[in-house]
Amino acid sequence: MNLRQVDLGVRLGPLVLKNPVMVASGTFGYGREFASLVDLNQLGAIVVKGLSLKSVPGNPPPRIVETPCGMLNAIGLANIGLREFIEEGLPWLRGLDTEVIVNIYGHSIDEYGELANAFKGIEGVSALEVNISCPNVECGGMAFGKDPDVSARVTEKVVKGGDKPVIVKLTPNVTDIRVIARAVEDAGADAISLINTLSGMAIDIETKSPRLANVYGGLSGPAIRPVALYQVWQAVNAVKIPVIGIGGIMSYSDALEFIIAGATAVQVGTANFVNPRASIEIIEGIRKYCLEKGIDNINDIIGSLKI
Image (cartoon, rainbow, N blue to C red):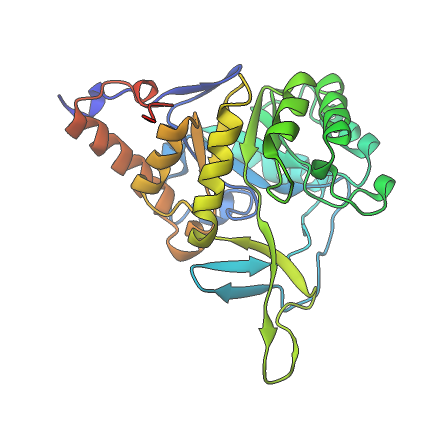
């Protein structure tokens, strides 16, 4: 068997990827930033940095802190805004031979609908990933994704407001991820992605002050991988739509754990800061694994966990 005989293609509802490895939103800019370091055409998909209706400067620094086996970030969803992305970022991305997924977030349910509508008929955008882990001003600052009813309402608004496949990104900071997963599935999501970061903080013992200006932030990296893997496995067994696994994936073996647990695809995040080529190496590692095991199609090992 040679390399060309391994089929790594996967399907996320109506969206087809050449391989199951995506780069996670917020860790890869808008794609162009990594063009001199990585052959972007080899990726299964690029998920661009989260976009809001208007540009956002984000939180003041310091807003990234290294932790044991991971990092805390409190970037504050800084981004260039919808209009600048469509006019300046998207035209360049259209020249790539890979799928482009736009991550969106709003401060109200109506804002999510506006964002979805703005991409209606826009070429070069393969799907929308809906971040429901940000503050919801309509519900007193609570994250949309912590309430199944609100999560469903956001999902429905995006599905009805746009014409792109919808992936809903879930927060792990909930009592039971399965309840939220089922709610967004019932509301029309084509797929779900999880997990987003876990809430955490760090303190400088000399100054007795938080190491993040925002006090707390999102924990990512290898430290959260076991939690992510467990929640992905729970979600896979709770819904019928495809699940995308995220959380501390640094190597091909990490990615395969999620795939064997039932994830149809994975996203690589924090690893991009450590090794810009991590996603490419993961794709190559998965391909090599399949060759060594005599596996012709990656779909043969999705959900192959033996219990």
